[in-house]
Image (cartoon, rainbow, N blue to C red; front, side, top):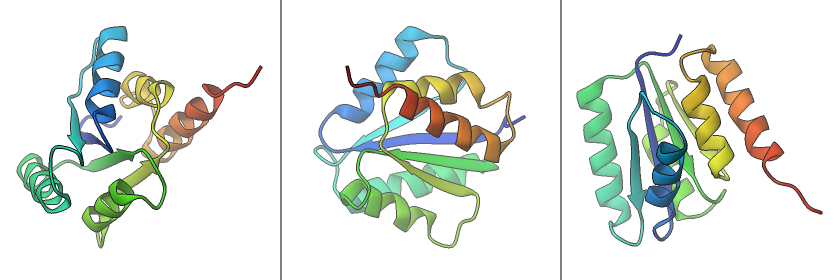
Length: 128
């Protein structure tokens, strides 16, 4: 249902690429997960690179996963989202969220997909 989708993970440290690698090792992916680290690139470099890739690919929908609400990665993602209704920012990224996205991005309509991956991310957090 969502064949023309762009997804990127933006985090502090090396978490973004680690999450992408784990998810891609768990399953075969039909979509590239672009990963960005604020440890490696400046905010401006991340914004410029993402805006360039999004402009080149012309996706119908964009999902930017970030680690913390209100943090630097959140600010970066929301600068990219500004005035772009086809871009969504989702904070609190974890492995269940990424796996759910990879499994469901072609099966579900966009609003249902966002609800599903958010719910699956929360289900992946358990205290015993």
